[in-house]
Amino acid sequence: MNIELWTQVTQIPNLDAYTMSYDVGAAKPDPRIYSPLLEQFGCETHEVLFVGDTAEADQHGPLAFGMQARLIERATGQTLSDLLADILLHRAVITEAL
Image 1 (spheres, rainbow, N blue to C red):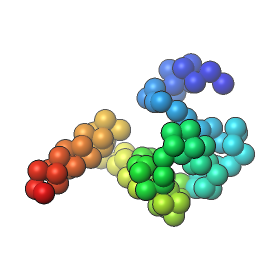
Image 2: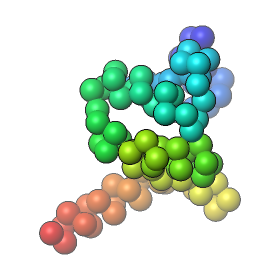
Image 3: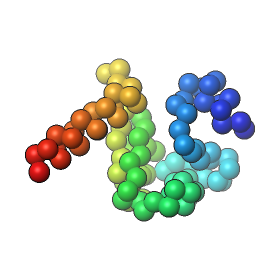
Image 4: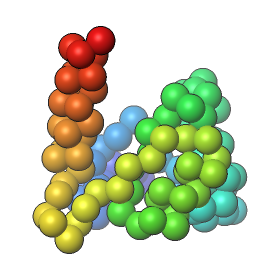
C-alpha cells in the first residue's frame, strides 16, 4: 500500500516509518511487529518511545519488549500532539532540575 495515500486517508501522521502487520506476519503485541523499525533506525529497545491508545497492544507489549511506552488519553480528548508536547515539556523540566 502507498504509505502517503494511507496517511492521508486514515489521517495518521506522516512519520518516518511504519510497520504493517501484513508485511511482518505479526500483530501487536507480538515482538516481531516492533523489530523491523528498530533494525531500520538502528535503535536499541530502551531508546524507543512507543505511543498508542490501547493498553495491551500499545503499552504492555512494547514494555515487555523493552521499549518505553505512553498511552494517548483519547477519553480526555488528548491528541498525539498533546502527548508529545507533554513529554517534551516534562523532559525539559527534568533536565532543568538536574
